[in-house]
Image 1 (spheres, rainbow, N blue to C red):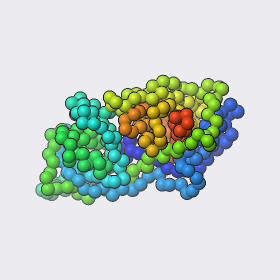
Image 2: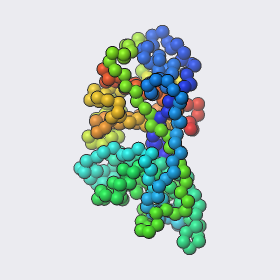
Image 3: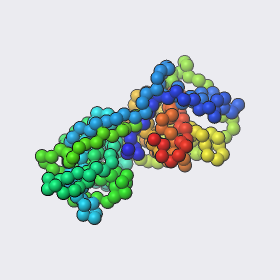
Image 4: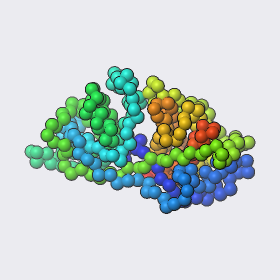
Amino acid sequence: MDELLNIGAKVEKEASTAEDGPADMDPFLTELLKNPATAMADGAGPAEATSLLVTPVPGICLKTESRTGEKVFVNLCRSEHVPPPPSVTDAELAHALATGDNSTYRIPMSVGEPHAELDTAKKGCTAYDVIVSEEAFAQLQAREGIKEFIVELILCHIEAKHNTALSRDYKVLGKRKRMGQLQQQRIRRRTTIREVHAPNAPNTTRPSKPRIEEVGKGEDDGGPTAEIPSYTLLKEPAEGRPEFYIVEVELPKVASAATMTLDVGGRRFELASHPRKYFLGLDFEYPVDHRETGAQFNKKTKRLTVTLPVGDAEGVP
């Protein structure tokens, strides 16, 4: 599954190692450490599935080859279950196209496993299924110059995930929408950010003992108009391998959690506020468990608090 695909789930499992928390712990953070699920949805209820099995809808088919000369097909598909890319102006898109800077225009996508097929000449070939959102596919068809840019992103993702090298000399097959049988793919759900209104907001006094690993600005990965917010990254416990990361982000220009998206996968954390107000990208020392990640936005303090349990292994499913 593509590393930047969206996560999210309500979970019921409590973090038993943080039942009470240190005596000086912020009560709000203590509650998040006890049960990250409470920060992900209003009220109690059964846990949502951490992922969704998606059947891709055929779109267009690209023909290229590997650097070793093997014939390769890319089935560029679409699905309503893949989140759309952030909205960008024509000027921002032109900047991305001119510079090749794919941090300006990020497109969520899912890259499937390669599957062996037979071409029209009954010769063996390899096909990859790549799923983008309905919105991204529509832009590919309608916006001038964007097709080459999106195809380049797709080829880069395939190369990175499957450790291969593909030729940029490709052909769009006009009458064929797919090569072979499209494969279902499992996509992680997006984290839900819960809003906390001022009257019921818990005490947000800072802990008296320092557990701060880093304070500063995130990397500029959101394009020329996205501001990088101030943030605090804490570890619990402070020494050695942590059980939790806690990220607190100051978002004074955000009015509602509905305008934010949060993506977590492996060691990567990405937060975006739309329309392009903020972007924060972080890389953790240890992989985190996206299944129990919790997020809560305090509308009074304009602070987003995210708890991320550290996974047991590099490959957290």
